[in-house]
Length: 462
Image (cartoon, rainbow, N blue to C red):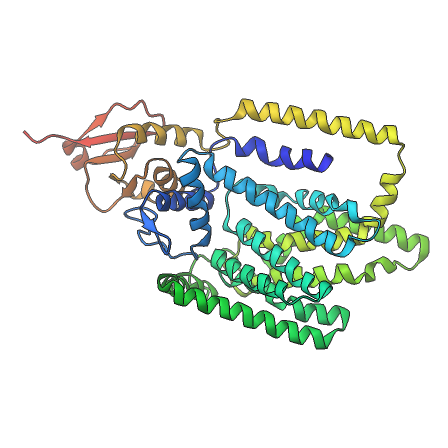
């Protein structure tokens, strides 16, 4: 109950409001366009001026999210419903991985622990509130790991086929970073010294993954072309450090990972020191279940140092495995701590959680439709979109054209495109900015009651 309350408290109040990080708005705009017939599954479309053919990422997340736009319409909450569902599926994936190794012991019912530690990481709630591709990829990778490990535990090869399908879907969500589960059989061999089965299972998994990829490429030739363009335009330049360099140090991503995991790591350090003082032998650190998840987490995160194009949220798919590692190690101590209070104390904790949950839901209801960020910008974009027809290209200054969140909101809300190189019937300016003489002579102000911007319309020639 406490974990549920934390989950709802961290996500719902923001998800019911408008305003998102640039990448999330962009992905929602592309998905909405796809649902409304602008672009296609394998040739996504952003604006008429910027990325008319969008091949910066594989298309699967846009395809999935476009289905939500078809189902729920173009309202701001559509991508929020999608993000919330992805968060819930990730929670299910974490609990299933936990139960895979703890189903028959006293820790079975502690599957809330890795979820609570996962929620304690600031990057997690931020990412799921902002509709990032890594969220969806993370669902496919955690379930891929689950089914691959399940194939070893139950000795059923069919689960490897499911794992292969999920690996391909992870790749189609965010590219090669989604392929790390393919190493799970080898990691299992390292930890459990089952080399014979691991090599056989690894061969099966690779065969299934390649076969499924080949079938997809034959069945959907346009998908193959989409991936080729993605490699040429985005992946290879990024790996060659020729675009969007965000750091001068390859190990910045590792520092960010440690900082994000600081609370779970502190918990582990605390119990390790306690056990060392008490027994001088913290043997719980040798747990093989924890080691397998740690190795998986490392394969999901350490390869990110290859490129100097790094963002903290690239770590999202690896974080569930880090918290599973730490949870397995600390759960005996957590159990002792929870067993210590009386039943009446636990009942009060449950009641407090229920009360908090009710208050958060009530607060969220009052926040519905308000703005979590960019209030002025969003209010103006809505006003513009109610008057200017969908699909219109609007002239603007270079400064506004390079305001990427404005570009994204214009596309997401009204399917409007900005162009700084050509003249069109409408012209967008920052309020109180100096108006070019040519613009002054050829355009007149349109009264839209805007706060931040000024909209002009071309004068009718007499």
